[in-house]
Image (cartoon, rainbow, N blue to C red):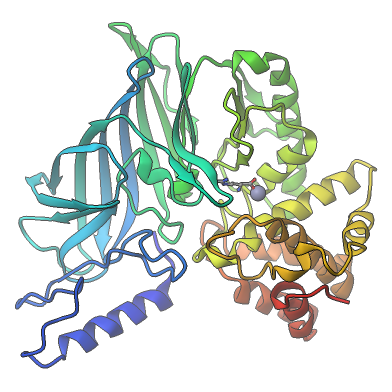
Length: 470
Ligand code: ARG
Ligand code: ZN
């Protein structure tokens, strides 16, 4: 499900230019043109900062993940079924997959050939696929997943084994460590999960359980379904021994909380605060976009939390109200409204950080204004002022500026347009792009349209200049 129409038009234009190239000139590498007008899908989706992430030539509608995991051997056996539509006449296409052994691939039930190079898995179906045609890819694979390890500020992410199962957090591009997919947020899809683990282990994925877990032969299968479009990095299959609390928020949204036994004393707080925050954000940001809420605390010291759709995960610490407010704000900003390019990450992290300040204000603690002022006092030499948050750097994506100065941008906007317009704007923003894709330009346009003000200078100073705004 890709809403980047402009990108598609560009790609189509590029392909027609290539198609008109003189016949004696070989097509550029990676754009092999066959005589019949079918071409290979691009090995990247077109994010210039992450050129290998995602793929071109198709748009995924649905992933069906079947995963069997053995915590003792750390082996995963998987079958991923992908329903997609071709966005060009397609002779071959890529999936992203890191490590693991591919046993076989079919396209529309016919055996396909495939090659691997780095994290690119190239699939050639026996028959080329027509533009706009739907097709189904089934990949059977297995192996010991290896998480991504990043030397800058991403840490370890992807499918991370733990003593009793796995901790799965894939932002920005770690979903390829556990299933083949189009690993970039520009292509969202719905997900079904069938996860088999040893009896006694719980499997927690996105969305809702569809039926009771089924135990047979010492193994239990959990089925989960996320019916709303989801970016691959938000998919999880968190496995282990968990204490659970299930019910509904006071406002009536199904609420699912899970804690590793080591964090059992956090379970009630996680459940209660997640419910209260979800309901409150519904009044501030507009209706909750998904069918359930909740959270997971696992015994893995990730050094971060992640806003996994419907079920944020907290890595090895008891979450306080502030971080719960942050991760649940992401359900609107990041999960329902998704960025098409990583450079726009402040639309996720700046908004979720500002939500922490709104929560503090709501609870009668420091106001957003007071928090803003404390940060604004930081000396001109503070690293935050030299990193413009409106263009997240690929090698320093989660820089503190993207969070804090991103949040400050929203407070500066609030002061410029007034509370009434600001809070109307937040609701119009989430309503107008529900389940879709967003860009910084589209946010600035809406803010200008709703306030009737020229906000160019404000956004320029806060988002794009390497110095402290006045
Ligand atoms: N989006 C997460 C948050 O808001 C941070 C994820 C960081 N990812 C990573 N690989 N370190 O807190
Ligand atoms: Zn965040």
